[in-house]
Image (cartoon, rainbow, N blue to C red; front, side, top):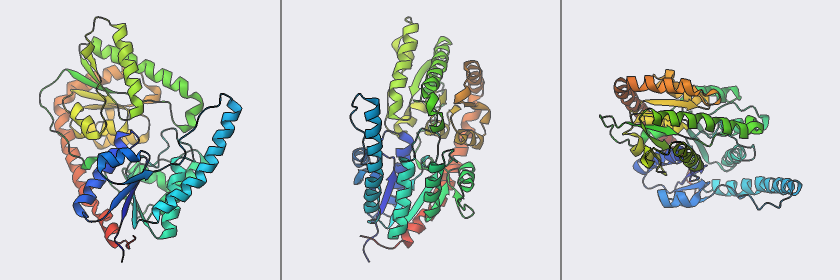
Length: 407
């Protein structure tokens, strides 16, 4: 029998620290439990995956966009042509990749969510093509600790639901994700809730003394797919509220460390820092610091010494909580509320669409007052989640062990 081969699949290596952290965690598990099995990846950023994680990788998508002609009508036609061609080419490429593997794994991430702007022919189509190819070639498909939501767009919903139904093994990172999959028509009665894969990552020790610095996470926020028509207005409002809040924090005597969870957030952080410093020329430049990172490990090394964190990216919130840092979630989906409830701090949750700077300021004051009490509680809960994750990852090991070999 040919040797088994495991392949990771998803929007990996594309600048999202949470996505890459999920890959890192599961890859470490495989290297520990199945050290002789070849592993590779079909990723959105294959060069990053190869350089950072040392595994072969190929590009997830054939279509990388194209030059603009200057004519709106012509550009629309060219886009439609690229999309139509890309759908077919990507299906062929994904099938060709899948058939070489005994097991294909979608490692965590919000892969089956609709909280961000994603077109049906992007991630939903690639997941559908993966699932169909796995079924056609006898490849076991594991969807491990993923986030899910019931998308309003019917085509996206059909593609995601079909992909989930065809998976050999499914697990979700919270109960609301499993419920969302069930609402899409997926039989989830035998599926498990598995803590987010990031819980398996090592965390630096929490420092006991206060630093006087608050971490503020920023995001390139334009709303979800169904809000695309008002995206610019959504972004303008969000930036105005966050800039006001950032100014109030430094005016109160705190230093600030700006945090991001995706490469696309970096320009937002730089713009906000420059705007607040320009309004306050008397401030020292290091009153607001921003040192971009590339991984969740590097992110945690920055937040572990902070007095508190205010963040929006899901894994920015999660990893701060894992490090025992009192955290406020400015969420854009149900997953934030569920996460904060799991850690017993739901009172520090805010909705990004209705974010109010006065409410956020009062929430930060309350959080800082409770920080000494909260930190040990957060660390204990994180340790418990980590143990549950480690115990239940044996289901992935069982699937790999039982899969038939494929060269």
